[in-house]
Length: 199
Image (cartoon, rainbow, N blue to C red; front, side):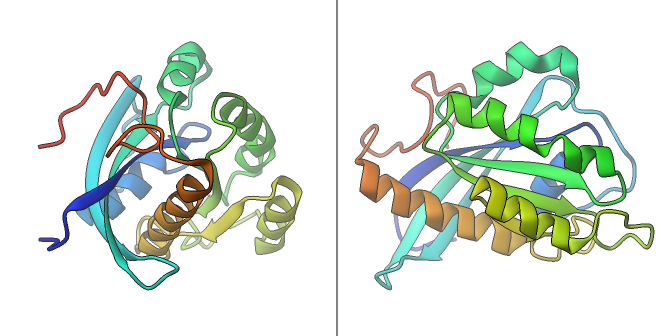
């Protein structure tokens, strides 16, 4: 258990086309588990994770993150927009074996940043363990510069870079929150409705 009291609470949303590994990335981070079987996310699901990070000043900070997994199918456009509201972090995931999922990143980014202009965003190249990779690492570097976002190469299957991805997002959200000022006492970057329990 973390010894420090929770001082920050953030909302993160996972975006991207269907079957790119959004759910798998979240499950690997929150449960350290992975399943080869694909089960389509219906609407939205969420998970909680309490994490301890070292701030830029060297202090240990305990944050609780609510990770919203939003279905990628077009039929959920309006639902996704509602659940994006109040997010302080977003990951946009693409599948390195499916180039179209990479080409759709710009559209996902625009949709998210329109609703959450101050959020910290990471573009995630997932499934790098696969031998049939078609999207090269250089493409991710290009998107990083083009959109001015974080970029990570991950494998939800092996766990490669998953913890780094989420920990650095939390640090980015903490730094941005310092610059922007508090949104709500003890509850940073989340919507006011709080549709979940934190116990």
